[in-house]
Length: 221
Image 1 (cartoon, rainbow, N blue to C red):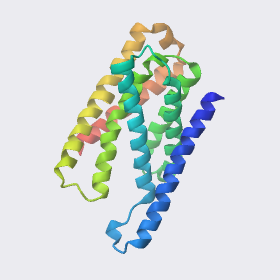
Image 2: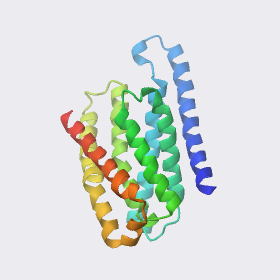
Image 3: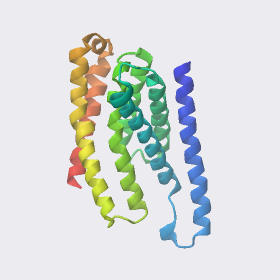
Image 4: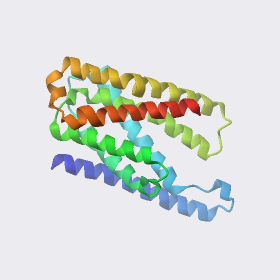
C-alpha cells in the first residue's frame, strides 16, 4: 500500500503542476495579442515536470554517491515511487501524440516496468542512486527546449547546453548503463538472478538499445 500511495501522490503532484501551467498559459495567451509570444501550456508543463523530476533524481543520486554513501538505503524506495509517479503522469499526458512519438511511449513503458519491478521485488535497492543518475542528462535536454520555446537558439548558451546534453547523454546513459548492469551481475549475482527473466533478457536490454537509438539521433542533429 505504501508504494501505491506514494506513487499516486507523486503522479498527483505532477498533474497539479500540469494543470497550473495550462491555466496560466491560457490566461497569458488571452492577454497577449502577439501569437509568437503565446505559450503552449501542455508542452510547457510537460518540460517543467520533466525538469522537476530530473533535478530531484540527480540531487538524490549525487547526494548518495558523493556524500552519505550508497550503503544508506533510506529514501531509495520513496525516490523510486516519485519517479514511477512521474512516468505514469508523463505517459498519460503523451498519449494524444502516441502515433508521432512511439519511441517515447516505449521508453515510458519500459521505465515503468523496470522501476515497478525494482520497487515490488525489493531487489538491488542499494544500486538505485547509480540508476537514477541517468536522469541528469534530462536537465540539459529540458533546458534546450526552454531556449527553443523562447526563440533563443542563437544564444551561445543554447549551443553549450546542447553540447553538454550530448556529452552527458553519452556518459550517463550509453556508457554508464552497461557498466552498471555488469556491476550488478558480477558483484550481486544473487540479486541479479532474482530479477524476473523478462526483465533481465527483455526490459533492461530493450531500454539500453533505446538509449543507443536516441544517441544516434542526437549525433545526427
